[in-house]
Length: 96
Image (cartoon, rainbow, N blue to C red; front, side, top):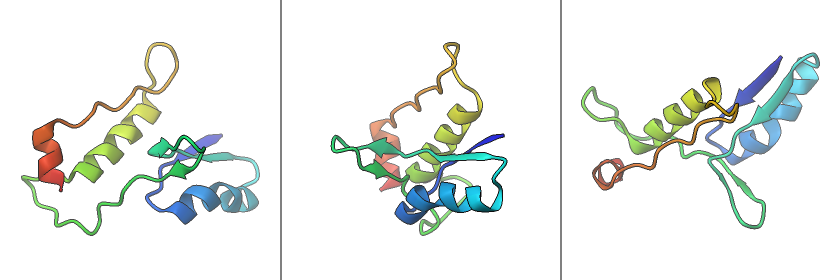
């Protein structure tokens, strides 16, 4: 079974697949970065747990994470994950 992980920390992004492979060798683990820098550095998603949550406000970091999770589960017609839409200016301002 192939399992994708979407971590919010650099150590988890780099180390979780190998650690989990040692415990569950019959599975394939891979991490999904938020982006890859031009030099090849994989950057994790920003965390959201330090933000105050309420029923009327969804932090931008949480929205990005949920969009990526959904795109990994439901790939597009070409078999590739869908690209998460860019946040609008109003949503981005609310996330700050």
